[in-house]
Image 1 (cartoon, one colour):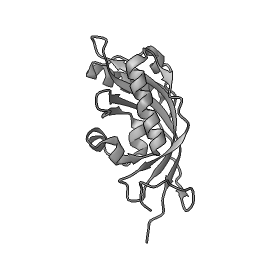
Image 2 (cartoon, one colour):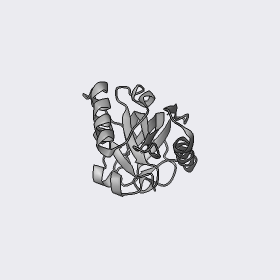
Image 3 (tube, one colour):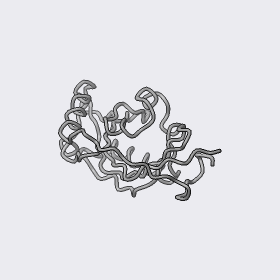
Length: 174
């Protein structure tokens, strides 16, 4: 199967998911440490939304390049931090064009007009690791998005939280 086609639910194996040992407070502290080091400010309303097992990511507003991903993301993703920061997201992952376009529109809208954390408002959907040989597939549940500001108050990035509901791995092709 070509990873650019819609995945089906047949012939997949559900992988057991290891427990995340990182606490909610530790994830928040790690995000705050990154933001401080990068000179970014996020609304307290976003920090208050962080839940256990949240994947936390920060993307630049200019080019949607990933600037930060937390331990939970790195625990489940097969890509390295370097890959995530240098390879365009669309080459690493695949999701339906409709969802991808809505996500990009929502992120742009938040960067342009929001000052606080808001719900993504996008339904759960599948995300496929395009470069993984067994096309690992995640069911993503988008939670919150918020703008990130620099010291001058300009919105230069956005921060997001989401959770992975299921992880699949396609059987090896023979």
